[in-house]
Image (spheres, rainbow, N blue to C red):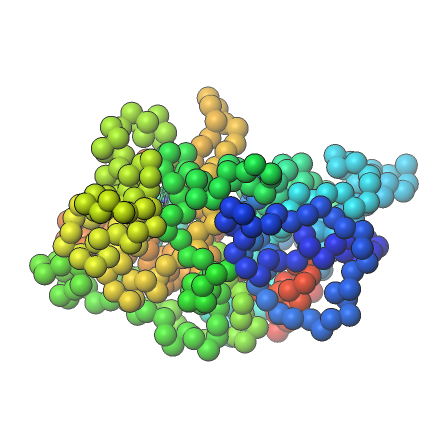
Length: 461
Ligand code: HEM
């Protein structure tokens, strides 16, 4: 199907630095200059769609491999992804058969992809179907434990593959999924798909990332890892098989702790430790926790400003932490006061920023995640569905997302018995779908479709 080299090296190439700030250069439309990358030696690296500036639109979809030759299906998917990332449309050759090209993008070569990235991840069932041996799999990958998370999603099935498709134009993202569904009919089936949108984009005159707000009206992203800018943050985002010995262990319940003199948190007894070793091929890969949920905005909007701010732990307009009221120089970036004094409860112990990142120890900081989600924005009845397409990348699931969610956010015995859960939970009312995935590294970071698929141990095809 693929007939030419990439039209441009730019949009096909994962950004190697965080380019999400206002002022960084948006990707340009396709150049027709011949590619020179083909001659260079392959260089492994992270997938596209993690480190670059998130474009305006998100389409995230989970697919199940339904055919009898799943490895072939995955290679067909790779070809489609390559074609989409190089603006190669399928020609309509034979009028006697259904057109391979669905046509909504027209028929011109080198169409503008609007900064399209396609990030591909595999679930535990995906690696099952691909026949990958246990010792060759990402060590921390399990099927998302919905019951342990306390969630009852509308669709519990996470599929075998997840696609995070981002572009500044919804026609571009739609075409990717449409083409996959059309071309792989009978071999792969979409089990769920959700859409998100955000205000800051790659367009001229765009809204700055710093001004990116959740539907609840608060700045979102004030405190986040910056894996493109900071080596320490990068190490928390991507797998390094040589670093697994440094991951934080499960803290003991009921022990005197850093959270205050009388405060002795109790953690769920079945929290999952990281065990095992990561295979060498997982380097520069990343685990993805996806959770799509609806926020009860009518109830949220009826809260007083004081209650809303207590729920998040920040001032709504400025993003400044509530415990910095006495610091006239404080900005949204100024470190919270509770970071250095856990007994300071001006940010309540049930506030979201405190439950999601209590900052009580070096181990706590090693649990931080790279959030790259989008506000959920899609049709519904009787009105729009608005919420959060939560997408978080990390070097593990167990020591990061899962611990944050189970050990802190939803644990009423943290930071001390009967403390209560994260106040934001009451507005997070309906979980639609989600999953745990491993987003494998690229064998050649200049070719965003070269995600690594380990060999099977069996006769799986
Ligand atoms: C359910 C809907 C949710 C909404 C509307 C939401 C919104 C927000 C907002 C407004 C902030 C403060 C801005 C910032 O510090 O960047 C924030 C911070 C954060 N959220 Fe959420 N969030 C949601 C769910 C979650 C979940 C499920 C998790 C993780 C399991 C999570 C993890 C975090 C983290 C780690 C921070 C940064 C805290 C810090 O370092 O100060 N959030 N979120």
